[in-house]
Amino acid sequence: MDTLVHPSYLPKPVMPQVPPQQMLLGQKALVTGASSGIGLAIAMALGQAGADVVINYVADEDKAQHACEEIRHLGVRAEAIRADVSDEAQVKAMFSRMLDHFGTIDVLVNNAGLQQDAAFEDLTLAQWNKVIGVNLTGQFLCAREAVREFKRRGVNPAVSCAAGKVLCISSVHEVIPWGGHVNYAASKGGVMLMMKSLAQEVAPYRIRVNSICPGAIRTPINMEAWGTQEAYNELLKLIPYKRIGEADEIGRAVVWLASDYADYVHGISLFVDGGMCLYPGFETGG
Ligand code: NAD
Image (cartoon, rainbow, N blue to C red; front, side):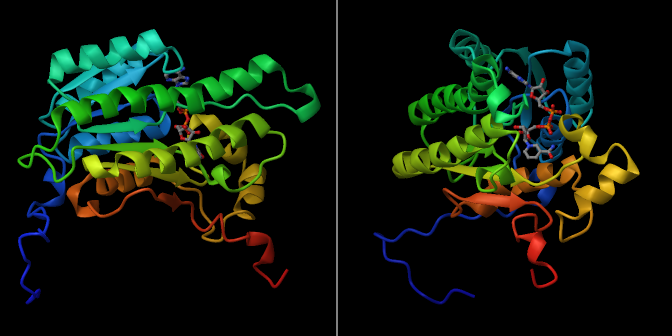
């Protein structure tokens, strides 16, 4: 119980009084790369929390449309918009279509990502550019459009304490080096400092910017790591919690981080990784 008086120069933010299934009621969210894996689970979780959702996809239109139908069954609006996030013109067109349909945007989830792996000496410039283009430049292009709209609109207290939220889906590989995946690790390391620098710059506008860093999550991107019992046993050596993560666990973290329950959480990387960053090689004393 707070017994301190708050003088007028020290206003207390109005905290939400809503049940979890309404944590994002009336908010408009865009999730990139949302026709599969973690992005799909995030889109579903946002819909379950009451948000209207744009599903961005680059391939698999059928899957994107199917996801929209599922989300509409939750009683919220959903729209699928095709765009390659690494292409500036397509990103601008996607945001313009979202603003036409939904009026504004409150939550951007920068999820689209890919891997193109090779031993360093075999890594081509095309593979380097592709991964940096989608995983890093794509996050920049989408965040820039979102921030422009957040600044234009400002805070709408009926919707959220914040003027907008950017959530970057990064990876444990923003801090764990990853041989054979240098382009991927470089892209996620870049996301970390892009996120933190942007967070510092836009905080005065009440725009919140954070990252979620998944560990090993069961999705198509890493099927070779869990597709057989042998591979799974190897994977567990890297996870102190001794199980792989599920995509909806990332979805739940996104809902909390996007909601006003997390209004004072800004500029962080939230690791959802079963302890993968805890140097598991030292589990038994090293
Ligand atoms: P996924 O392959 O199922 O999802 C990636 C999505 O991004 C796909 O839907 C794909 O079509 C989309 N995409 C690729 N290029 C795109 C482009 N140019 N424009 C728009 N969309 C594009 O894999 P996932 O595991 O769900 O990965 C989602 C995010 O999570 C990625 O950023 C990935 O790096 C990150 N991540 C995943 C894991 C994991 O263990 N699965 C761990 C750490 C981080």
